Image 1 (cartoon, rainbow, N blue to C red):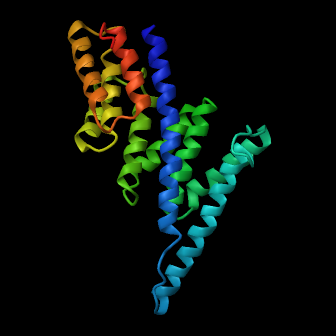
Image 2: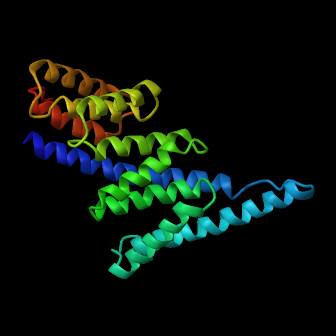
Length: 230
């Protein structure tokens, strides 16, 4: 039962990442596409070119998204449409202006993960996590994705340090990072002391104002496996 719940946790986390990316992408593009004109010489021309490049890259990004969901927002993409969308995201992830480039890399990583191309997904998440030119929150998301994707393959101590770093940075990723720490404490080789720590972390997540309803539901199910129903 615990293994099934952990798999459900991982799927819920993946969906949460996609929703978070879609929401944050809208905010970033709203800022990017309202770049104020800067008059004067070469600097003004460079800003104009950047504005045009951002707008063109944004159009391509949403073209790829529409290919994946169809005109009504729910139609599954055909194999050809998915391949074309991946090609657009790949091009943007390599050469688009900052902002669009990182979001394209994140979305492409999710597609690669769905295609069971774990190595490609890890490389893309690492690209975003290492790009200090962009928004720290997106870099934290990429770091979180890297940790989740390596769950079960990377050394537990290394994963634990990664989740603890996210907890120390604070913000909205703290409850999810604590959930990750709790999952590490619920693996087959865990001890009673590990279970006690997992219970403490899960109760913290359940009462955190930054936790979503979906996260609280997942935490509740995990607590039930520890005899903490209700």
